[in-house]
Length: 309
Image (tube, rainbow, N blue to C red; front, top):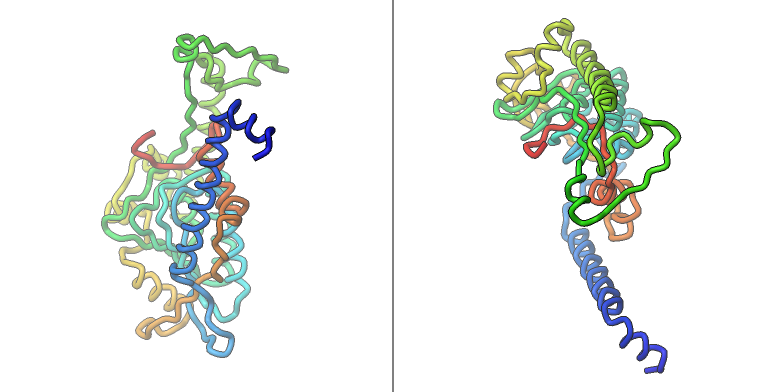
């Protein structure tokens, strides 16, 4: 071992320890992802020689952070002539406003070309329900948790903690509202009014699309849009759904809407399997979105239902 390396090891043992730990974690994570990718189920489209008319299945799962992958799958299925109808299987508490609205618009665009059925699984609330509004028919289980028609924006107020540890922020800004939502101070009444107006505007966008998609009057849509959660059975009675049923029922309904025989076993066609690796997890769309959700410190405007709000 050279004198330089020995000197570094003695002077910076903590840094060296973190570097070694980081390498070990990196290798362990890489091994786990390789193992998962090697044993996990591969959902691929049928071979071209065995291809036949079928139902496209797109899964919208977890918190909606980005929309690119779902939009790409919808676009591909829309132009694929072997796919006669699409079922969007939703199991999501919602997510960011922009991504939820983009998926809603793309589902609505796709439904003009071929039938789209939204199949609500365990939870399809807030932004998850928003996305479903673009479909021709919405189906849920009796106990599906849905609704939560509303929008939320959260700011952390750490002023007292900062005072205790002696942390102080110096802010230089171009306008008095530029640092709205700062964690180092309490929000002013003017700022609170401004943010409430923003929330109300985005909430009204949701209500408008509920009214349009479910053919409800604005008065009825407003009455249902106080943020509460509904069971699938309740949502059906209130006009937020078309029918009750499970995933198989949804594929049969999609087949019927497409003019296929709903009594026959349907050929279910999933998007092409994406290669899964540590590199794509870190650099790909889902990886970047997940890192942003874990480490991003900025507030997000979300259509999301959470027990921890």
